[in-house]
Length: 218
Length: 218
DNA sequence: GGGCAATCTTGTCAGTGACAAGTTCTGGCT
DNA sequence: AGCCAGAACTTGTCACTGACAAGATTGCCC
Image 1 (tube, rainbow over the protein chains, first blue to last red):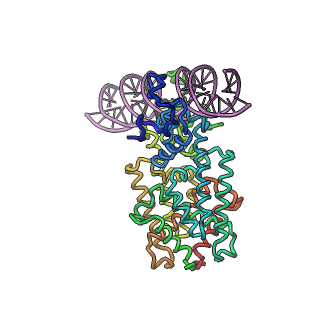
Image 2 (cartoon, each protein chain N blue to C red):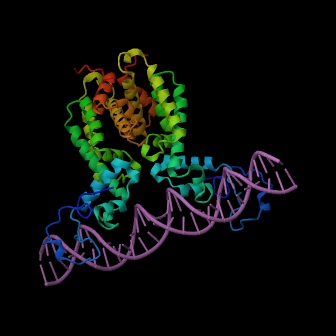
Image 3 (cartoon, rainbow over the protein chains, first blue to last red):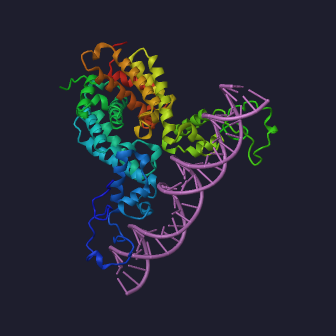
């Protein structure tokens, strides 16, 4: 299973031009790589997203990520403290990304579609974001990112057409969020494969929601 | 953290009356327990459900379960083969339970409410049932149980009032399932705590769905 | 050019899943 | 009654993992 495309099989950024690496024959028993990775944090993150997208968060191993990045087994800890720290960083990044895409939504239905698209385009983030037991809940970066994304969600609901006018907007929010979240979750866990078939999942979602929100928006 | 109420701290069924256990002074260095647990499979399952409900499937440790049941670290493997086997058994049991409760539903909305109630009453089962990466997908018990539960779901959708008449019933099914599944998922992951407050979650769900399925069923 | 903090390494420990091989018990057959 | 096949459980072991501690290397700033 090839894990990279760099010559030594490790995922490293372009060597920060150190006058030809052959000039430094220290570490004779090792593929000569600089002591400092250069962008280890990002490399670990990318590898982690790959693993999670493929096999879920439970398949994540810090030591495996270190191997993929071509660093020692304890290197990741310096950037993320521990496994929980890594997952927390991913969740925070996910909330930030989600907030961005929701901001551009011009409609509640559009927000729903964007929510589903986000889950499809960032499956690893999505699979981690809503699992408190995997995260450091008091992490500042996480809490602020989450506050932002849920604020965006609330905003999208508030711009919904007045059908919901009378009702508690929070209830409408729950309904819309549940629908989108459920669809996204079932989709990612391959529970809709049979029904969706080879159609575009977002189209299926849009059509399905038409059944619930009869499209007066025309 | 007390894990049991039996005298030796292990979770064992009433000793299958073997003429007073003091009569068997073998295993002198051990709390005298019968070589055979008596109902280890069920004990492991119960303990596993506790752990998962409290801390999620990733917190599950076969050795920990063995300790709780008062057996050796390899004993669980005999009943479940491995970790995946245990989770698969739980998922199968969950689908069977879900199928039962859905059978008793007299309405699509009622089915949704029952779905949410199931998730609340069997959080551990629910958290495992829809995670293919944790399960042995080709397990016979699992596939048959799942076939039954999804059949029940399809049935509930087909009995829905004819509002959906023209539409693809599979689409209506997706919409209803997504809504219920999303709500249940967000509820279990404590993402609705703030909005639900101290209200009954099932009431909240019922009310929220009213917004989407305007209750002509009165 | 000297020191300091960030980055990365080596070494180690306890916990875990999986497997192999042995032990103890149960239940059924004759 | 005796026995034996196999179920239920144990002990022992291996590779792997997360976490921590202590040391090595390096960029960088004054």
